[in-house]
Length: 115
Image (cartoon, rainbow, N blue to C red; front, side):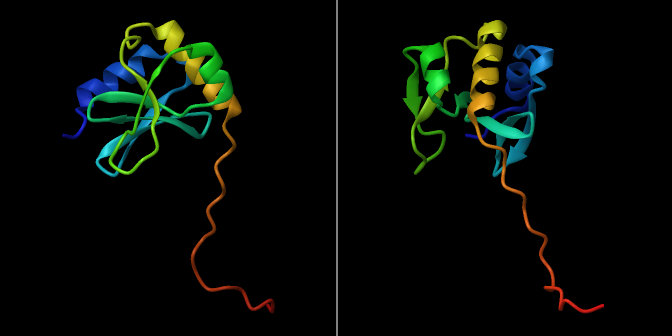
């Protein structure tokens, strides 16, 4: 079952504006981004957040589940979806600890080194 746009819009709307959370459709589901980093996913109308040490310390006891078959279990946020301040703090902590995404190399011919 794919996620609905209404659920994605609801979840993104829960984050405080300064988090700058956006969603992007990916592989039939949605990735959540802030500061250019993917910190979470929405799969089957469920919110998943990448686990970090700081996130674990802040969130305490959080369920873990794989967002899709074959994936590693990550944080599954179910009972705090209406708590925008809590979600925003978790997002800020998580994004702060995640590395910047690797720059993609452009495909094409390698240069010959001559002009």
